Amino acid sequence: MCIVYTLYLSSVAIRRLVLNSKTSKAFAKTFCVLLYGSYLFVALLYYLLVLSSKAYIGEVASWHLLFGYVGHINTTLEVLGIPLWLVILSLCILLIVSVTLAVLASTWICWPELSQRKLPPISRGLLFLAFAHIIGLIAGSLAFANGYWVWYSEPLSLSSFPRVISMQNHAVDAGKLAALDYREEMARQAYTPGPVPSSRPNLIVFVVDGLRPDHMSLFGYPRQTTPYLEQRRRNAWFLSDRVYSSCAESFCGIASLLSGRFLHQLPSKPITIHETLKHYGYERRFLLSGDHDNFYQLADALYGARAEQIDTEEKRSMRYINNDHALLGFSDQLPDASDTPLFIHYHLMSAHSLGERFLEPQYTPELNHSRPDVSLRAEEPSVLKAVRNRYDNGVIQTDWMIEQLLIKLQQKGYLENAIVLITADHGELLGDNGQFGHAKALNEAEIRVPLIMLRYPMPDSSPKTACHFGSLAQVSPALAKLIGIKPPVVWEQGEIPFPGNPLLHIRQRNHVGVVINQDCSQAYKLTIDLNSGEERVDLLIDGQLQPLEDSSQPNAETLERMREAIDIARNSVSEAPKRLQTKISPMDANADSLPAKRGSAENDGAEP
Ligand SMILES: [Zn+2]
Image (tube, rainbow, N blue to C red; front, side, top):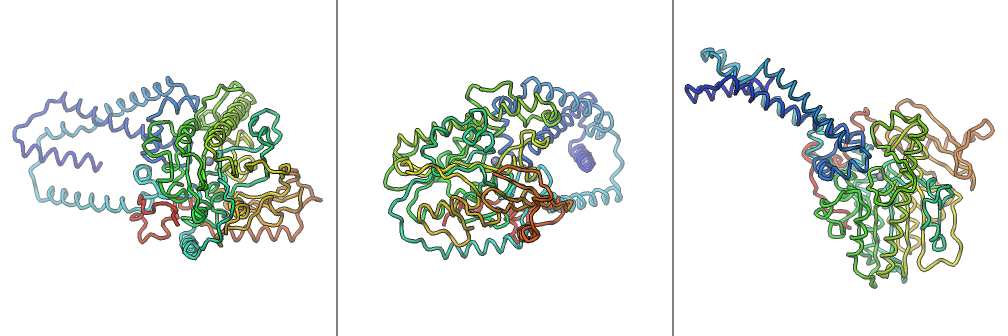
């Protein structure tokens, strides 16, 4: 209404200025239909994209991210398995709806036409109304622009000014985060490296987005999905399918892996393994498939200076962002191995539902579980089978990618002395509990990840396999121990194979939990839904969930220990109302006023 009224007032003003100007009725009508129609079409299309991005990635996409996918629309549709005709048909329907509404609106109110009507004389009353309207408009705009919900909930605002770090769906209590940040900065300044170890192996990390260990033939899956990794078993130093990520989504999974912490211990810019390795003369390279700037928002918080990434913004805009094949080209640009040891971090999207597929599928028919209709048909066995087929083909492509990349690194001399780590940031629901995707709760399928450690040259002994459960948060400390570098004091303790004693924290939104190893074959998992207060105990025998019977209940002491651990973790994460909980940015801990901090990219990476 405000906009219409303002347009009306301005048309009056224009008409007063340009005397005798006449606009034909037909022109006015056409003008209105075009104006209203295009506005409606753009707005509806935008909100449709917002709804899709909420469905696919769980948050409102930034313009950059939206244009990234729209710019590669053919690949995006191909990956999702959505035919182009369906998109064109939807756009046509949207256009028809917009034009129909515009025609209806223009018969009701059309401002150029209104401006032709006989005007009332400019009275004091009209002047007062106009003045009050302008003041109201300014005040309203200011209140709107500074409203908390606008900055943290309004889609246009979120698209234009994406939050710097969201920890995805985990809001962290701002005060506690400020304390964690302070402690981290103190630890960073106080860190003095120990003596440089005589042998500094290259450290090559593969994070495969959404890779489930129980879909890898390396861990006994009946379909042969990881033939190359099976071949490399002779290089294996450690193999485990009993590893928990610290949450069921990318941000905290990767952050925990690289910075030796559980989710509730994470500061805004944690001291990472690669930051520590720099003190020992390591070069670092990040070769990443997936959009880590606009979606994961990890680049600034974790990965460090841009100069150390090979896939620059410019290069990434030229390809579909989730295409792992590009990593081969980026790896070609690595110099040959020298005396300077190298840390390389690869992020692979081949197993992810948005990852581009370029190998001929081995299992058909395929169905991408990110398609909106799949959730509605979760009960159909044929749908489940097709979803699993597609996922398994992705695991096969992952295995092939790792093979190709390791061959390249070998040719360049990086495998003369190296540790290769292959893991995931989280798992993936493939119809387990009737759900698809990840970031839902603490289901085993979405929170368990593989951990494979290869040694070059080949280790003397056969691979150590896991008996106890471990966490991604223990990996960096274990690597530090293995390489012989001093771990920062803020890291968790950790060694590989995992020791039996620590409590492993897990969290996903309002689901908070802990896993405790009882002995080599038995563990308990306690989870609490903070919304309903419901508590659930799971028994794990030899790595698998087993029904909990009266005789296998944890004793009171174990239960108490687990509850205490959960209390510590939950108190570190905000339990504000859910709407706010998912919207508070950890960066706000340092902000004087909330909006002023938004969209700033003041940090230049996790440099020491
Ligand atoms: Zn992920």
